[in-house]
Image (tube, rainbow, N blue to C red; front, side, top):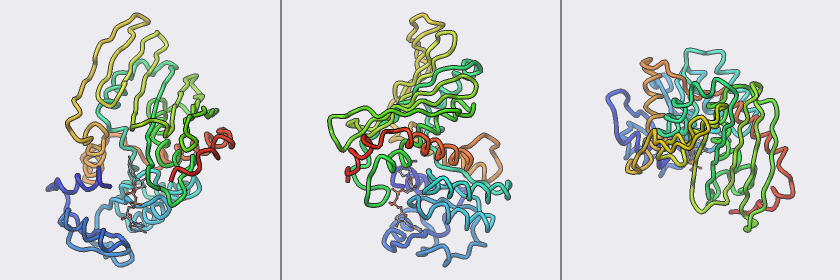
Length: 322
Ligand SMILES: NC(=O)c1ccc[n+]([C@@H]2O[C@H](COP(=O)([O-])OP(=O)(O)OC[C@H]3O[C@@H](n4cnc5c(N)ncnc54)[C@H](O)[C@@H]3O)[C@@H](O)[C@H]2O)c1
């Protein structure tokens, strides 16, 4: 919320007016109201005149998020709901069913990395390469949570559902072909509170995604590479650049995109563009594809499968990060 929502709302726009900040923590509600210029605060959406609202941003812990989004959809309010959009696969399935009945109400899920500048460039640069089966590598590592983000217990499962789900979402964005099989492997780390998992996704079209996810690194890092069937390798070694590192098998090293990290993550992480896209779609100015509830549901199902593959002994070794 601090990194995306508040800077976005603080920037302001003629396209929307913040109406009400809802938070059971009154201090937090007032803080956000002061930053955004919203007219009012409330402690629950039951206290809000929902008829006066066109769109909502739901940035709450996973447990209430699906229920709140469902309530808002029932009032035909467009919703941006932070990933994972619900605490479990059944909760997301239910939300997906509700959303399916009202296709004219916009429900977008906050998979911000689809909007990250370098990953967008990598996606565009590999459109034709990805028409044939290819090999995708994604690394998504974060030392977080250094404080509990999913309640008091910080486990491998919570990390995968909260953070690793971004990697699963990126895999399905790059390779939309359905996943037929998931395998997972935990690698030992030197710190019992840290873990590293390698997850393989076998896609129906013959493509393969390999995800390296974990909280073993000292700092947050995301990188991705597409290995095309002709031997070309397109890589985003960080969120700041894209290179054609091999061209049809020959060493290349051609930079396709470069960005200096001066934007405080606005464009680099996709935090700003995803919310701009949400507003544009609510105003019917954009027909671009966006991450929706079906993506969140598929991502959650992939998390379920990966977790069942990861060895319980490795998982239990990392149950006490908090
Ligand atoms: N896209 C990303 O990279 C990214 C990064 C961080 C967090 N998130 C997501 O954003 C969401 C919020 O994360 P956070 O760390 O800000 O969570 P948080 O635990 O700090 O909660 C945010 C606020 O929600 C309020 N809240 C709790 N229950 C509520 C309810 N029923 N109604 C209204 N408000 C309620 C809390 O009081 C708190 O002020 C999570 O779903 C998380 O996964 C996404």
